[in-house]
Amino acid sequence: MTVEANPTIAASGLPAGGSPIFAILRKVWRHSLGRIGIIVLGVFVVAALTAPWISPHGPATIDYEAILLPPSAQYWLGTDELGRDILSRIIYGATASLKVMGISIAIALVFGVAIGLITGYYGGWLDDLVMRIMDGLLAFPMLVLALAIVATLGPDLINAIIAIAIVNIPGFARLVRGQVLSLRDVEFVQAARAAGFSNARIIWRHIWPSVRGNVIVYASLKASTALITESALSFLGLGVQPPTPTWGSMLSVSMQYWDAWWMGVFPGAAIFLTVLALNFLGDALRDSLDSRLKG
Amino acid sequence: MIAFLVRRLLQLVPVLLVMSLVVFSTSLMLPGDPTTTILGEDANAADRAALREELGLDQPIMVQYGRWLTRALSGDLGRSLRTREPVAEMLTARIPVTFELAILAVILSLVIGVPLGIIAALKRNSWIDSLVSALSLSSMAIPYFWVGILLIMLLSIRLNWLPPSGYVPFHTDPLTNLKLMIMPVITIGTAQAALVMRQTRTAMLQVMSQDYIRTARAKGAGEARVIVLHALRNALIPVITVVGLQMGALIGGAVVTETVFSLPGLGRMIVDGIFERDFPVVQGAILVVVLGVLVVNLLTDLSYTLVDRRVRL
Image 1 (cartoon, each protein chain N blue to C red):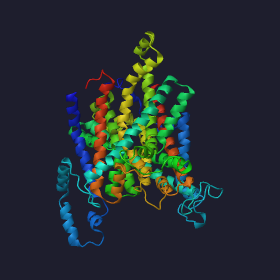
Image 2: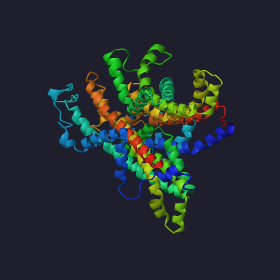
Image 3: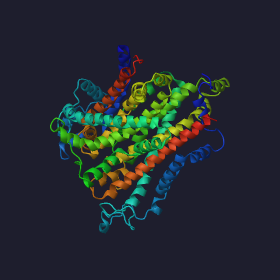
Image 4: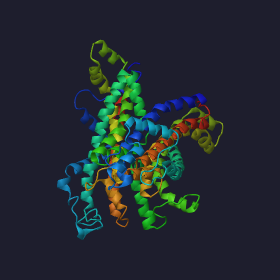
């Protein structure tokens, strides 16, 4: 197979030199939905990073004088069943939720990419074996596999990260392996082999740069699924444990206080907006990397 | 067709093997000793040891796995550690609930998604197209459990139109059953509808630009006939694929949706089982869910032949 025969893969890589991240960000910023995605996600990330300074109240500060208060000037998004400020808990919740999402996707990316690069490049029995395992994992509904893992390890923050990372590894591995398979015999790889470069160097310096663009797009799209999975685990009581606030666990508690609508509406809106922003960002990334193909 | 079926079933063997290993590994549930779940905190060491032997927990892990696999293959999924009820019997009661939820949600997603997708494709780049696309992007970002909570708040608490939660079997009281199912089905069905809509739109756009559509029009076929008989039929294959492939996500959605609406289905069984460290229950429910998804994927492949006669498996 030649490079020309597969322009999508060869051309979708990021530029090898300069500052690729900023180049991509600039392109995404020019995309109207991408800009909304960056702004909304930026707000949540900044809120998560600066939670101790910007929260109007402590996330666990109990105030029995202020139980189940609707939104007001003092408590912008109301208070919960223990008089805790919903806004502050949503801000602190961003820390936990985004931490689980970010770390788990990073772990899935590292392992998935490594598996995909190695199995795709070397092939053989290792490829067969690993890919059958990946198929077995992919047969599980994502949340059900995450539940099975959490059931085995026990519910807490670290295990939620591990579970969400593991359920996402097969996707990365399959994506990368597929691309490596079509790249390993193209001319520039053959040339590198003829020049006597080691396999590790060929994989890292020649193949990976052609694959990483699609990996970044995939990671951004998977991040939104990871966030929903994290929220679902927390909602079911199997994710990050109290007293650490998470958006999912706040929603779970809201189901005992139906009249306090603000307890259910605002944490859910936080999840919705973050997921929407991530989807916008993913779409914009895909479009901007595709636009390279159009020249 | 037969050759295809045999090939597909053979491909499933390694998948099932990995799946069974993952499912079995839930019996290593930590922390906590299953004997505590059954005998309580105060049981003495001798009783615990006897029970461990009875349950086979004193055997090496691979022996336990082999024993479990052999029994599972013969349909014996063990008993609940807590209630001592056979897991297979529990599953018989739970499967219809999740099955009904899934089927109704798929029907709703098709009823909403296919017409909207067709309209969006026919009115391409109009405000209707933009509105439908915006709606579908948004509904894909809404977590199931939030939709469920908002529906209960609106339709049960504010408007008092529907009961907030609970379950009555269809054969006991069909009307109440459907009333209780409305909100859970909307919860899952609307998110699926977004995907169906996007896929229908894309597929219709591709099909409508084909030569045979122009030919059909040139022969004087009415627009409705062209759309339904000529275009939609061919556009349906990718839509069926999406519905089939989304079965996993739908079941994942059912897990949380059943929790929101207190429906005694497979999802609820898994979650309750985890909390009670009742691993035979968790294993049985997960096993059925994954097998269900695999069967649906197989049926999806087979259904191509019904929709498109050119496809020969």
